Length: 251
Image 1 (cartoon, rainbow, N blue to C red):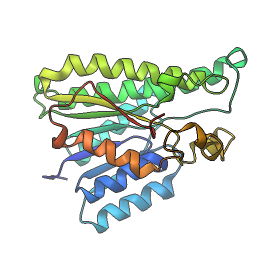
Image 2 (image 1 turned 60 degrees about the vertical axis):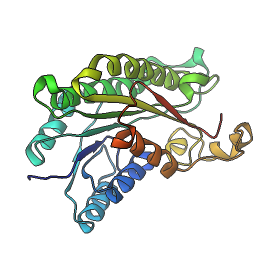
Image 3 (image 1 turned 30 degrees about the vertical axis):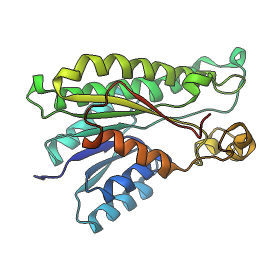
Image 4 (image 1 turned 180 degrees about the horizontal axis):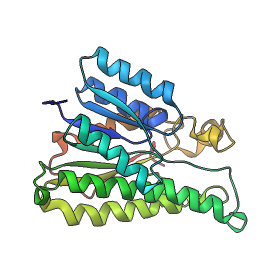
């Protein structure tokens, strides 16, 4: 599938912030690989929306916490597009609120596998395809971190915050390592955003409960995060790397 359009991979692209990134990318004319784990109908609906806009898109099931499945994901991209210009490292999970002392090993490992190791696996594969040292054309990696990386998630999500804090360290180090290889690496730190990740953590009303802690006195939308991420990926941010953009209402 030869294409002159830029190609974007969005991990966890079928729902929430990932789906909003996909919709914003369609408006901007990207061809797309939409990664999902379970939400196949939602992913396929986004593929149809891209096709209706005259774009090429595929939906690929893969658990990014598995290095083998990430390899298969990138093989699909190689076969369908033959290039990759943007990686949106968006896939992430959270568990039910818990005190740090009660965190179970299995929970911690799963969160680290998806939120951190998945981002690492995907970024490694992207660098091998984008880097001018590997005859690539350069590109952009945007890591979807969290304001929890700064706030720490006490009494609720310290393990989630740790995974995002490590992602931030990766963003800084990788950005410096590949800056002269044509790759920019940046991160978005969303705050309290209206997505179903809160319901998956057992508290669907969390954003409204905590909105008074936000200086802007409201939660954010997935599209507000997506538009910031698309800017970081674009040529408009051509001199921006190793940077963090907080989309958190001032929190």
